[in-house]
Image (cartoon, rainbow, N blue to C red):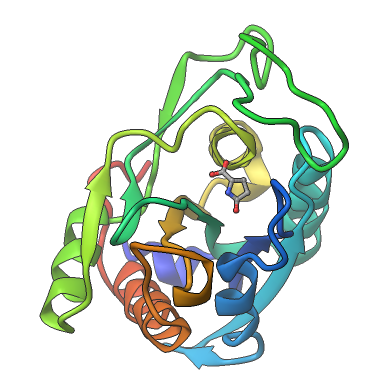
Length: 214
Ligand code: PCA
């Protein structure tokens, strides 16, 4: 069955994060903001910013999921030091902060959701997205780990919500990390390329089936 036809609402929820770790900007928010309100394959893109804070980030995300009931959710974060758009494969059920979050918290070896499974796979068609990005000449990779800071926390919380909430049964979701912008350091990608890459990735995710689709 075509899951797109059964999607609750023809919306794409696209999130970025606040700047963190003393930085002035976060390319994830700048890139997703540029796509707010766009139409992609019959879906309206809703962009939102999450706080880089354990707990609060997931409260904001869960409220957005309840409000928009999106067909597709892609959360985006900055991964300084990476040189490519990283399509995350798996979220793990652990918070282990290498630096304090924006509220000063730094949980160590704590579950994101107590008693929940160790991991959830992305339900995005990450290999098809990789191929689509590479066809556009954009640096892209499948990543085996979103780390254990706030990005993995949000990714795990998203995938757990999708796995357990009946109203999100037909929602597909996952996480994408993006490199720094040139003004933040090396390696980097331009904001234009990040926005173009996200547009290509979203189109592909709307068009292709996922190997992990329920
Ligand atoms: N990157 C951090 C959290 C917020 C962001 O943009 C991470 O990779 O966990």
